[in-house]
Length: 290
Ligand code: GDP
Image (cartoon, rainbow, N blue to C red; front, side, top):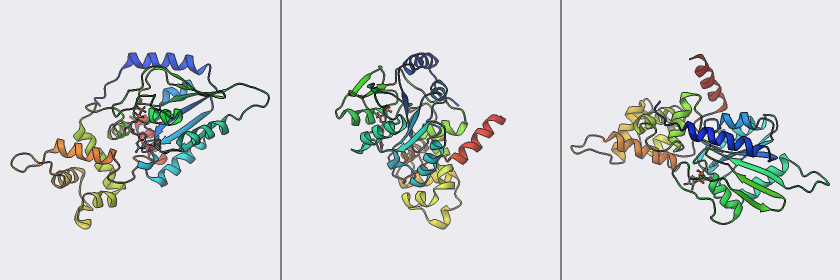
């Protein structure tokens, strides 16, 4: 897989996070609700093993609600861990996040210390949007390109609640092949990290097996005829429907792939989650055997 890694950044982030963890009470990890396991960072799990953790399944508005419930239950079953689902643009997101933190680390009577919280997340999961929502003004930079949150920031939200932004960048760590594709489909690993046509074909292969009705509805495909289409036949069809054509009328596969990925990222195909806890277990097992 041709994903670009930045070992230097990773090393720096690891050192800075280790240092910061010494002075916080708990850790928030923001995840993408469409790919909760793939967007989790195993390094962070290792470094913060002894801290209470809040997993935020963000972008829940784009994710499959039923699967989100399954993932929340999965995370909540872990020791010292709470999990909530959010849509970062929702006005109540910040309040929900603070409330969940307080539940996890209740205020100790007689101890007048603020709750110190480190917020982490791989690029593009919506961390800056969440922080901005908490601050109530545009302060953390947000953008569509991965990795825009750079410098360490300590954000005093209240006398009794201190939020620390991740020092350095937390890059995703790909431990199963499927998560590389899922991260690429979500936009987390940036354009050009993987061939878009390959990513779109993998996505279509998953969608045709798990979200066929949504795929058929979005691209107005005949239900019977399309029920057995392969991923490449779907890409052809989407190219045709979206007018991704080369001179002479042949399908422009690159353009069709871009259209597919944009539709998925914008929620145009429906509310979709690319992995379940059960599927993740199977992928992990397969990866360990290889
Ligand atoms: P960061 O790299 O984790 O700081 O991510 P950003 O906050 O910059 O968000 C990345 C993109 O996702 C932006 O285009 C946001 O508008 C979008 N986004 C963030 N949170 C949500 C959410 O809950 N739902 C939806 N639909 N989009 C979101």
